[in-house]
Image (cartoon, rainbow, N blue to C red; front, side):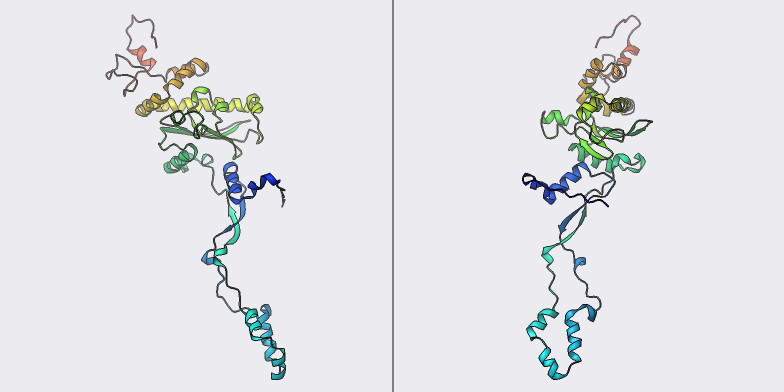
Length: 324
């Protein structure tokens, strides 16, 4: 195999601490396939203590070897060659194990299997929920999720996207600890950066939480490469399509959940109508407005806000325009 020896500078002794090394590995390489282990001290377990077992061989025990030799001598020779009783006792007694000192052992650091690499049918609801909490620090359950993969000639992508109930970052304020916990970027299961939504999603979809993992990007990818890469542009189109499909499915199949989502992020969709020309028509269908033709004619937070298509179907034949 290959052995790499790193010489640390005086001001970098922090990276020799076990806790710091474990933190770095779990942050950036917790999901890589080759096993990563840390040589560290752990608490001694009862199974680590020497077992009674059979008696030691005479050839392997210096004290027993001296005893067998002494029994073959004459009494006079035995008395002259035998060591002092205290010396014999010290040599023949095994040192007592130090239970509190601990033992050195290899500690695995990357035993987790990436959730986004597993088939959706093999992932339980509890695993999805726990993973969402770990990457977002959001105590609430997400409204919906999108677990997808894309494999093409020049593009390989796996994504696990979550749609939260509320804007946690907006509630806590910009610059807070949770504000950067958006879309996490992995390249070949190696963590690259947080807040990757700025490069891989349009601005209106910045509410998405989750992870993306691609084998089509370089591990040492830079900000300049992200802006010029054709693979990044293809990933952005694929993720935008996935977000739109998830929102359209939620709006049609789970209208109550969509109302909760729209109350929190409706302004972002309106922003997309103005700025995202490619997705404008589909975003228009996702907007909701109050209407006098709806039975529950309350404002936006009612259970049945109306979409632009509902306005068109309910308007009279003499109507020419719908203003919103």
